[in-house]
Image (cartoon, rainbow, N blue to C red; front, side, top):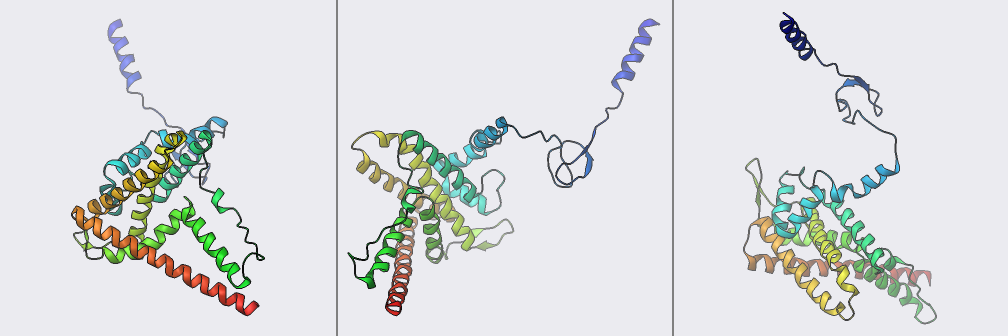
Length: 288
């Protein structure tokens, strides 16, 4: 009898339903039960801000539990074109947004450069340029200033990368317009401007990733020229690889079309630079 009573009490205890606590979302004020607000998606457990959370948010993208940063960097190295293709076709939860990944890699590059005592080439090239009008003709002073400023911008890892990607969009779209990608709905469409821009940003992420990995080697004396040549060769190979995998063409076609796209982007950049210089010269003539 005692044993039956014990089992009966144990069964009733196990079958007792668990009650969930009602929470009020601190973001939108919605009352709900569960771990996430069904109205805005914020977590139910929102703790007070502390220094430990700041550190977690800073290093979270690099060592986070979702592994998106590590996966994105890994696929950039081993399958850059397929990764870009997956993102374009809608498989986006597994990777970081191209611009977001670029910002994280740029931050890692800047921090490592600071720790190693190496110029990061991010903001220092954007210093104000001094052009002495006494040493130059007045009608060419501003033109010289603009040429130097454009050169500085193109060599900068932040502004130069975005500017290069923008200049490359129309040229690469023109060169690769014949090659189309099969969409999930069965349509075969070429890359549009935004998709080309994201492909160029991913390509810039590859360059930035290798720049970060090569930073410690820069501390060795006499290796700058060699590293520069190796870096140019590696980034060129990866550009060819990216478009080969992205649009599914052969190596030689990707190499040829990538070279044509680069040359068209360079010509486009020169044309814009000439227009800016001509306008600056006309302004000097009018103001003089």
